[in-house]
Length: 260
Image (cartoon, rainbow, N blue to C red; front, side, top):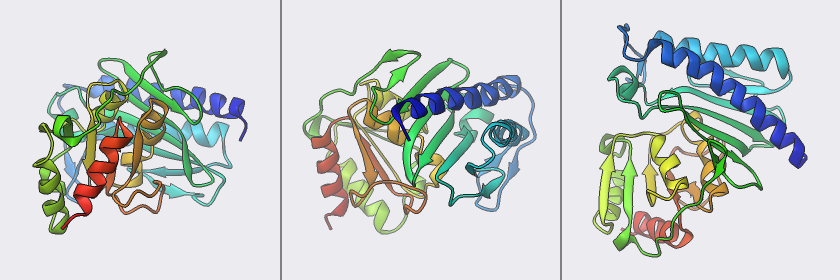
């Protein structure tokens, strides 16, 4: 794809986030029935309606593109371009009335994340990452902050419960080397890394719709995001991710996670 085609794709991704955000705002802090999916995660009609709205736009305007969504499954995932959608990343926050959830929209080109949006529809903060371009928050370029060593790093993860067995041991080992550990803000932590307020985000047990959109946002702000082994992220990654605003912090985190 050309640079202009990625810019056009980012504009379309913004339309997808707009459609999802309108639905999320309609249901936020309103009575909602909450169901439990087979993976024990919660879901509401807001999640399903928001993803359905995005998928309709894709089918209408990009019918040859693939779609990989949290709520309504995957189609055409071997296409050159695949949209990866999480209508409400952080449903537990959403149903609790806490405005740190987000809509995640990613475009993968030949299997690699090329466009990513993190949209917080209540605070109306939108981070947009495009491969080869600076990440922007509501139109203004943002950058990560320097953090050369783990000893000065703030580390975020959605919940300590996502780490099991050897992963739990590895996360504890990393946690013991950083300055601060916090939990519970889902994809919002990635936006804060891009804006220079958080240093490190480490997660496990994720699905592609949880992390693909974060990659262009983090990288376009000057950060690094890979799996725990340092490999690029895509649809076939194992769900363990490490994102950092400073490459030195990222390398040290991977070393800590691998030690043992």
